[in-house]
Length: 384
Ligand SMILES: Cc1ncc(COP(=O)(O)O)c(C=O)c1O
Image (cartoon, rainbow, N blue to C red; front, side, top):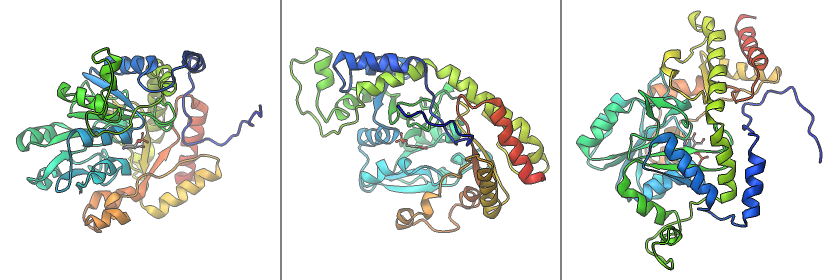
């Protein structure tokens, strides 16, 4: 086997490797049952349900597919409107657009980069079926006004908690307050099985149908539970089950979730402490530390003065072997977003801030020395 040279380049992300993955994957291989809904899928589901308190946490092949399952369960369709931030990944929008709904983009709160809940009310119409708050960087979006509006106006809330496993908001687990919440286990996330996700079902009335829709529209899940003696086609569904082999990986990662979260939070706090002076001096903008008390340390972002400064900072860090990428290009100004009516000037904060944001490398296993190397380089860029 070729051993890769250890490089001094600090990547943006490095997936966590637990000591148990190999053992559990070998167990899964030995079981001879690699398809979905096997023993490791059941264990991962139980662990997620214990962690979140959600009535059901169904593994899916990605957060994207968990959102697709949510859209199918809510029977979103043509004529429906779905309110979501423009400052997000395409997967927040695609599952609803695929069902024929129209995305309606809402601006962000500059402090948090999350959907601004005060702007949602003016966008709600009789056609609003779903609002999709994103918990950006694992920081809880302020859901209270959105949930109140949802009860008053009769729409659903689906929390895109792709980045938020392990985070809470006022003690409540992110992803458990809307009708559904969705997690990602992509390898850029705090815990990973390469590609994977979960749908948190907070209203038990949706559980049985979800089990059918994710299993190609069959009642195989009832068959596996001994409730029917053969399974058949009962609904129009799709295939959202990950292999049990991937679930084995996920179980190993879930076992280490607390360790991973505490490590990431330590690095996050160190970045904040080291860069706070630059924020006080007005050279950069940092997120407010106290807001992140309940976050999972998923991401550390800072904002530069403008796009030109950001481009130079990223290049400067690259010159010091530090990989620090920017993030989302606003959806409302993308080619498809424009076809849905997106235009310049529509979302002033999103447009002003997306071009200024930089993310610093952050993963469990990043050493304190590497963290200092990163913050010292940022300081050198600004202070010389
Ligand atoms: C906010 C958000 N939603 C959804 C996704 C999609 O997750 P997945 O890759 O698991 O489909 C991502 C991925 O990064 C994301 O950041």
